[in-house]
Amino acid sequence: MSLFSVQDALTRIAELLRLDGAEIGRKLGQVVVIWALAWIALRVVRLAAARIEVAVDDGDASVITLREKRGTTLAHLLRTVGRGLVVIVALLLTLNLFVEIGPLLAGAGILGLAVSFGAQSLVKDFIAGFFFLLENQFALGDVIEAAGKSGVVEQITLRVVVLRDAEGTRHVIPNGEIKTVSNKTSGWGRALIDIAVGAGEDVDRVIEVAQDELGKFAATDEWSQLLDGVAEVWGVESLGDNRMVVRAVARTRPGAQWGVARELRRRLKVRFDAEGIRFPGATAPVQVHFAQPNADAASPAALPPKTAVR
Image 1 (spheres, helix red, strand yellow):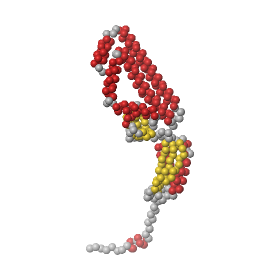
Image 2: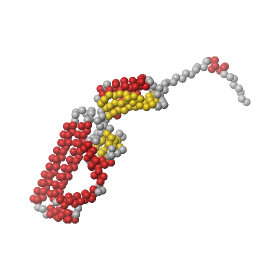
Image 3: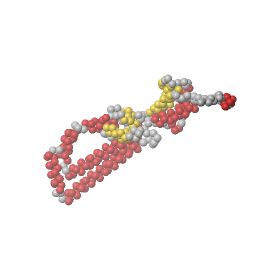
Image 4: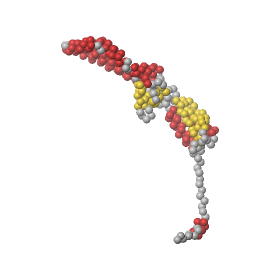
């Protein structure tokens, strides 16, 4: 800000102090009108954001679709950015009633240009955030991996992305630091289960039992709605000295793959135990029999005589 602008501002303030009551009352009335309009604008922003959320809601609370995620993200951004713009405009209009803001804005522009050279990372964050939203790379509620962190997206702004990992830790990542985004809940998921059994088991029987259990799992009302395809056994994934690994997969709705995988592991363990299919390291029960000595051999008369030691 130039010295001339500061002097103009001080002169304007001195003039304001000499205003009569009528002039002050008129300006205060204008301030009330400005902030009343700002309040109405804020209400419109909130209503528009709520309308977006209602428009994308399909009424099924058990499954969050990609359209719902994108609508929720846009509504959140509209609330935050819209609120900021309305408040800034209202403040500038209010300030303009008492001080000529033209020279102040010019001085602020020069100051902003100087600051921008030291705030290149901030500008980079805003540009990256804009393209994240424009390209719909992820949305609120998605599970992503970015900048070495993984978790559920809790908040998206033009500057940062906030993740919450499985341990409850909250990660705040500047958008400019995100080079690659791995979205784990986009479109569909896949539950992948590797079943390790003893190398001596009949592989065809293992695959048959596993496929039968996957079929029963897919037929249940509770879990079938989370599947997005056929659950099947792909076959032998690897062989070792004392084990073989059979891989089973199930295509699921976005975000359901972890729960489906845990339930399938539980069911396969119970089924394999019932079928007598052993896991690596497990051996058949060993029975040990001890021979019962006869009565004569155990009688005191049959024992050798004691020898006295002098």
